[in-house]
Image 1 (cartoon, one colour):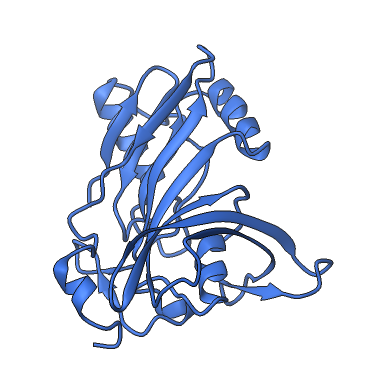
Image 2 (spheres, rainbow, N blue to C red):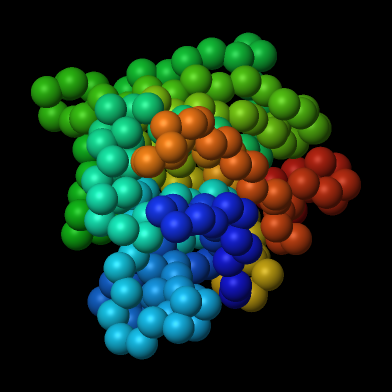
Length: 233
């Protein structure tokens, strides 16, 4: 699994993370995007020893798509502030089981995370959870699945996965949240049909808006098979 570099300068980097790769290292010791980036910068810029890698946001391990990183702490601080203020725009594509009743809409939910189980659930009492907002529209309809464009305005853990599953539309391959079958990434590991398709941010030093599109990888399940078979096949 090798990330695809989509944009790079002296301050920031945008890569297309493959499904199956961790964004940040954890107790498993598996390779992560952060460690890959550090190794890449050591080699590219001939910098032995430690190098700074600022991960501005994360994608779940089974999700692919655009991830923004910073090369300096100053750039990281400015980009992280944009993220906190909701000024970084992210657009996702998802393929879900079933069909939608409307062509577009917006969801507002309250989510609570069980950190021990690494699961998130929708709660009815807003005092128990954190608000999660996302707009959506239908891009393509099949007999058993639907392709959606999703624009979250908040960045909660597992947000889109839980908001879709809570409406009976689990993302294809997302067995954790109720999907009826699994999908495989290019390396044979588990993936879900969720892809961070585009990211837009203000450059930390130049002030201009940068918009980057991440092409879908070869394991993206938008094929004739995905649109002709039911999710339970």
